[in-house]
Structure formats: structure tokens, C-alpha cells
Amino acid sequence: MDGGQKMKIYVHTAEKKEHGWYVTCEASLQGLKPKRHMLVDSDACAFVYILEASDAFVYVVMPKEVWGAIKEALRTNEPMFLVGSDITIELEGIHEEVAYLIENIEGNANYGEEMEQAVTAFFA
Image (tube, rainbow, N blue to C red; front, side):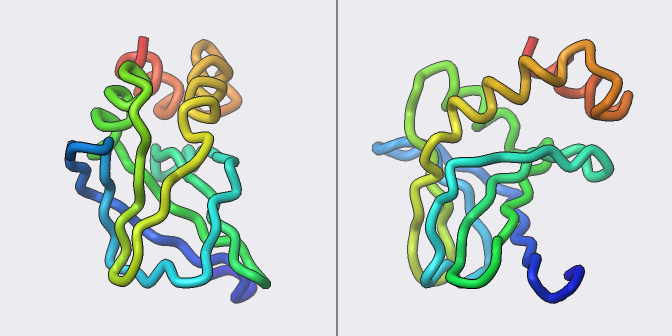
């Protein structure tokens, strides 16, 4: 946690259910709202969805283990939800954000060679 203002939540499992895709974390999501914005963590080779708290941002780190679910949610345009220890939040805007990132990452060395190759190979 740098500066105490950035909390990271890691998801490692994704499951398809009736209403869409569900990724699970161990954290409480109480008081968090979807920011409809994503980043890339090139070092961890992960996509990062940002949630907003009243005084901070929470980074939901989505490693390669859940890229299959992201890809499928994009393909079918099904919603994606983050299941916490207490509540579930819809990751609003994830389709547009991921599509935008994939477009920008492909062939772009600025994201780091490993990330660029992984994304291109997986989503191309």
C-alpha cells in the first residue's frame, strides 16, 4: 500500500452464472463504487479495475487466471460482477475499458514486452 491511499484487491477465480460473470475476492466491498475506469499493471501482467471509496481508490487486480472470463464477457457482452465478502458490485463499463486497453496495448511496447505479448496472444 503506497501512501496508505491505494488498496489492492486480487481476484483469482471467475465463474459464469445466470446473470453474467462473477469474479471473487476476499475483501469487503462496503462503501465502494465502480469508477468505470481501468488501468494496466504491466509488472503483474494484469488488468486493474478501479473502485472508488469516499477518500481513496481501490484497485481490483485481474491476473491472467481471469482473462478467459473477461474475454468471454466481452464477446457476449454479459455483465461482470465482483463478489466480495459482504456485497457484490457490478463492474460497470468494463467492456469498453478492456476493449480500449486491448486496442492500445497491441503492438505497443510502452506497456512492456511481456504484457503486450500476453494481451495480443490472448485477445487477438
